[in-house]
Amino acid sequence: MISVAFDRTALTLPTLTITSTPGGDFWIPEDGTEWPRFPRRKERAPAVRYIAGPGALLARVSDLGTFPLTVYAAGDTDGEVWDNREALQAAVDQWMYDLTLTVGSASRAYTAECVDDEIAWGEIDSGMVRRRICRGTVSIPLYPQGA
Image (cartoon, rainbow, N blue to C red; front, top):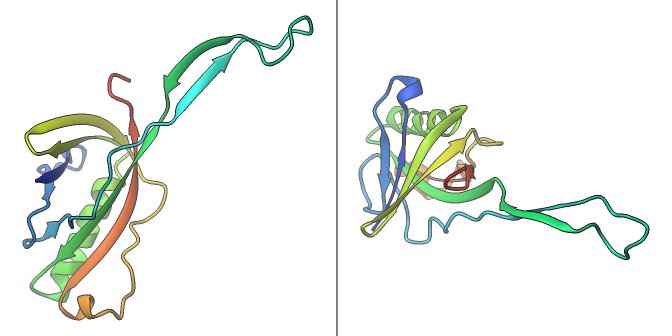
């Protein structure tokens, strides 16, 4: 089982937890997420004309990463679907917040920052929308653990 918990303390709201169990207001599809990815950044000394190539390697650190996530939002009425979509958008639009990813019984906490774009909710005329379900995708910026 997978779950993602968004701390919404800054919004004075309780934590929003989304699991891979279908049903309810939100759920993560089986193909709905990947492990967070953290590119590496290399710091080098300035190049000098006496040595060929780039400057000496000084450090290699994890940089700001991404957490790709796909989520279903649902509701009993069209208004509830809109409200759930807006609640999730507000959660990922927070300036900085804690995000906890749980896979099985293992949890990892990350510091996340606001997303660059709105959640992409797909086609508005799909059969899912008529059934009051929307599938959204978003890429959440995460700081490496310990950063």
